[in-house]
Amino acid sequence: MHNEEIVHHLYHAGFQTGNYADTILHVHQNTYRLHAIVLSKSPLLAHLMSTSPQSGAQRVIYVQLEHDPEVTQEGFAIALGYLYSSVSLSLIRPDNARGVLAAGCLLGGMDELCGYAYDACRQSITVETINEWLEFIDTIPSSPDGSLTPELSLASVFGHFAQRLRDDVFHFLVVTLPNALEINSSESDPSQGHTSRDTLLRVFSLVPFDMFKLAVESRAFEIGSDQTRFKFAKDVIEMRKKGIARGHGAEETVVLAFGGGHPGGSAVHVTRKIRKRPLWKVNS
Image (tube, rainbow, N blue to C red):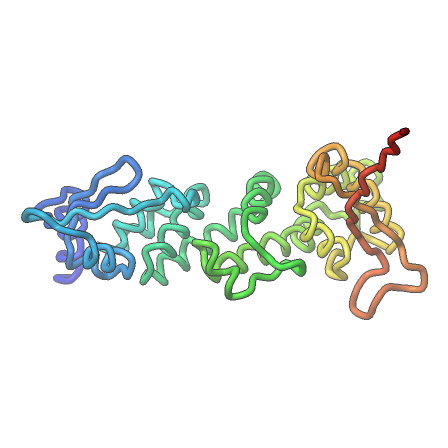
């Protein structure tokens, strides 16, 4: 009980009110009156406090976020508050979770906060939000097979959570969404099948190519026979020509390998090749 009172006092009088602050932190357009002993729990802030030149009685540090747009003002404030008290966990919502996760990863030393924020992110991947999640994963550097090497993980503020979020989006596209739309069972109900298939087509028309290829070729993507999968991929590619693939100078195609595909894979294969520029003959 006594410990809870101390933590409550630290959060209210220290973080929210800024009483007896010895450190001024500038981030975005905000200024926080904080306390060095608490901020030192964050490796990043501890480094800034030890390397920033000081003048006067109070430390002044600046957190530059120009290269980390995923770190939102709200997310950073929640992560800062977590240094004072775990009550900040109650402020995490599906709509701010990614910003909190980015801030927690940036500041460091916040495994519990990052775990809560990651779970909220994962649970927020739905039909209504999948478009913004597709835009997000398109910003994460990856290898052709969709994985993140340790070097690529370091390029993202999310660290190892970047790969986990990419995997979650992939699982949603390949397993969760087709099951939710009842794609397999809808073949017995043509009217329902038309609506469900249209939704799946619309979503896949926005998927970055590497993930689109992996998803369509995955055996876990159970939407019917290989012929059904081939027709689906063909229709998606037609939609992509007018949208995400337009103007990229590449042509996406799908083929059906008769006799089955490679072991553990699909008989449907998606490829992309660069269009050759036409050569113009100049008459002398």
